[in-house]
Length: 583
Ligand SMILES: Nc1ncnc2c1ncn2[C@@H]1O[C@H](COP(=O)(O)OP(=O)(O)OP(=O)(O)O)[C@@H](O)[C@H]1O
Image 1 (cartoon, rainbow, N blue to C red):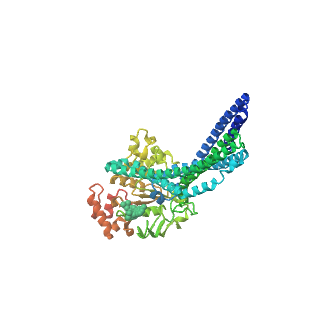
Image 2: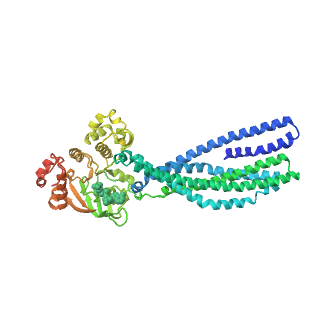
Image 3: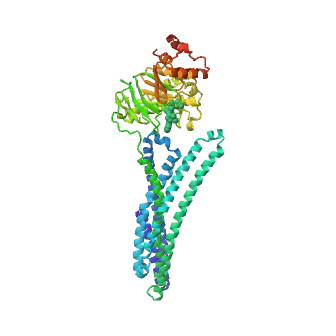
């Protein structure tokens, strides 16, 4: 502010020096003084540029720190928002808020106070100098101030609406572009290039049109304000000519006055421009506040910070219901208990609510009714951090990060030692893959780990989850991309680890779950039946029909269990590579 003010004040000196130059030095033929005053004018100009440059640098620095602070704050808030917010907000929309909106607000924040302060000071200084030069001329412009105010109110709501529409269209376009760029190979495979491109072009066109309207309204506003200024200049010149003709004004003062009258409108123009920007920035502020005011749907207001490892009394669902929206219930009064160290499988047809249940168990969403208990306490009584340390949820489509394979494996527990890492790499059968990679575990995986197959990515995610060493490991179709023998071998090894971990495995592939201590079979959001494989095979028609249907569609001889065999405990043990069933 000090630098801007100094630069501005230096700018008010030269009209006075010119007045002196004309009235005293040129008209009175004082050559040396004329050259000296000329040098002083040049010096003023240079000093103004240097100090102004300094002001602009400081302002840029402020913009940088402001945008950094805002960006970090916004990102931190987005990071605590619950899964549902992230699932319903487009990536591009989030990016637009973190990038463009923050930039606009930071730029405005760094110079709004500066511009306002400078405008007020300049205006006052110019007016005082003009009044001292010739008060009659100076007062000519006073009646124009109410007109400025009137013009501003005429344009206010229109400029604000245009700004809101433009910012929203930028966010929408970013969302569509991000989706497009993230899925180009998929778009190519579906032959939808042109259709998808048109979607992007439409979003961009809407953005361009909205920005065009915004610019037009701003320029119309500037033109209206400038018209008022032109009237003011005309009025002042008229009065000035009259004053000069009546000898009330020297020619030097006339020039100086003319310079001031044009400059007195600079702060007004800056203020007007700031006004237009305020409307634009308001839209960005509103979009940022929208995020900052969103509260996580899963509140972190529990107070228990430790979950025993291994569990002592287990996990219980009591009359749990859940709806995503409206009245359609995805889960209907689901109740069951999981014992510590039990291996529980959850199965059922596609869409019956298995993943929804696992999201509730991992507290990524809250049940709409009913309660989930962990170690005899409601799970919401635990802090989210302690819960995340207690339950590791491994999804079907894991996200791998840029970085090396080792960094990805250690992502959830960077303190893992080499021995543990090596054991888990063997357990999930990643060893041959590591051997094939040029730099082994230190090979960078690239964007979205494209160099790995779907099954390999799932194995990396599974290893990453196991290395978290949580008392509960929740696998939601986490091995669905593996072939049956590999899946069996990995789950077998996992179940036999001496870690006293409670395992919850969700799968629609029943035959990979036969060995579980207990299977809960879901049907349309309700528990159809629960028990061991043999029990269900005997008592649940749905279980039998699912198993039969699976056997028909799978020709893998090696691990196919005949249904008669399924009823014979010994044979189950022979066919069951894990051999953990309680028959
Ligand atoms: N985010 C969501 N918003 C609205 N409805 C959803 C959402 N996620 C899932 N659903 C609906 O909830 C129901 C249960 O879905 P869920 O993913 O839990 O089934 P699932 O048994 O895991 O299926 P699959 O075996 O195919 O993964 C489905 O009808 C699905 O359409």
